[in-house]
Length: 254
Length: 245
Image 1 (tube, rainbow over the protein chains, first blue to last red):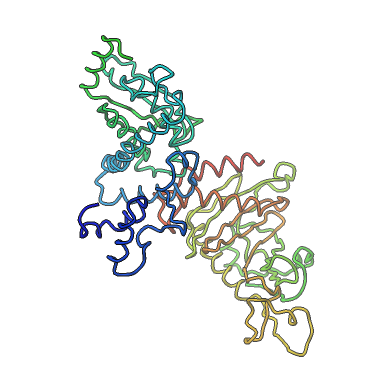
Image 2 (image 1 turned 135 degrees about the horizontal axis):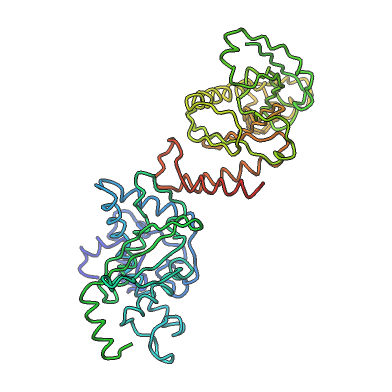
């Protein structure tokens, strides 16, 4: 909280978001409003407890409805579709929508996995100490494949593979047989290269970057008879990451 | 067109004598309908769920929809058969048409569009000709004495089933098929052609509506009121109907 003029501009978020700030803040706030409504902007329940007041672990098992997510995601796709030049542009926009989410989710993921049990995060650290952030690529990918996927979709991803080609040792693939985001989406035939799970690819990219692994992630359709919306997320790590990986391997860091 | 309309209290299922209705079509009209089944079947339309209802009884040529199975009378194999599905948007345009059985008589795309538009009009007509029973203050007939909550008393009439809103055509039955029309609150109409023996048509239609709400309306690439081209909808619809039979 800074000087009063700036404070008034932050009114809508500060009032609802940080109710635990000093009481003087709260008393000043309504006076600066033109209308005497303390709950303008975000709606605050009568007991003044918002989602921000809850303990972060309180909502760990809370789920949002699949339908409301489907409508929200549908609108996000529609929004991203405005003024795009092509399918790649659209996928890039979806990716950019997911990227900040991945960066922020990472902290929540670490917080929740440290506060419960160390086994939740399949880190290479000894079982007694709290898990570290992943240092090696495999650890990171297991973090994405398991805990991150469970946090987002309530289940693990279906496969994790390393590229067999010797030319591309930096490529890894995470497979999801039935991505939640694509449940209700049918892509028209003229855009059949498009995969709206590019949004999830953006989340993965954000998580990788947040852990200090520079990577590019893209989503690709690989339909099978049984899983018509099977999606492969191709994770391509940057050269610096691969160099560091070699050094860490030599030094025996796990 | 030789159409006779009876506003009486006859239940639709029991009106078997209507089979003998004369069907005197001119030659031109016969040519118009030559791709429709020529058998004279009784067609009954009920605009309310149960009797007493408004029964419009007309000859088959007037309203038959051309979806009779060409192979007649195979009751064992078609016991649960769903023949085809048509979805009409609120403006009367055809937005979805799919057949689930082989051996149905094909119509051209244009004919399907005409069919959808015609049905839309017929549905509107059946809605508006639902009889209005005058409210006589002195009589004590049950329909007049118990006006529905939504019936304006000032205008002085009541519908056959007080309290129920006027729905228009709900089903149409011949001895070859049964057409069930389900209109959503938003005005979209689902027409389901089934075998007359199929039971639980309401369940089927409700499930189709659910699939439509899920896989069509939640699809960001679907434009409202436009033809439905959603691969996930096709897939789930086919899988669900196959699972039932």
